[in-house]
Image 1 (tube, rainbow, N blue to C red):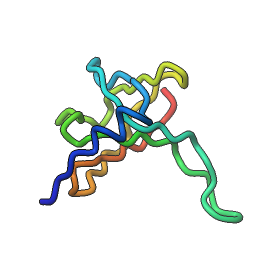
Image 2: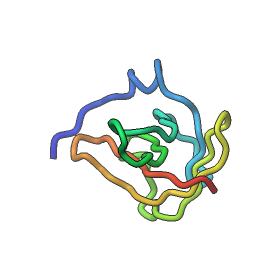
Image 3: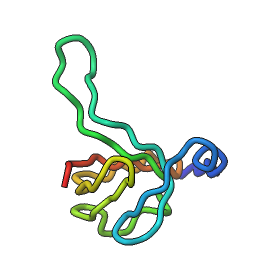
Image 4: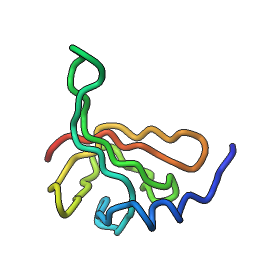
Length: 89
């Protein structure tokens, strides 16, 4: 598995949040639209895979400026980055 250190990008452009009670830093993406006429997508939070607890499904993610969310899906990409699909909690 290829892993890279993306911490500089999260430090410069990420937001602080809390995942399952632990502090994390990543990119929050609000619910949006994919393409013309496509269904709305769920909000997501991208962060280092090492920051994701083993039991991420159902965990609470709190983004101070956005509120609390429940993790619906954990998608690691194999490079050390994971995307959490969220549901407003």
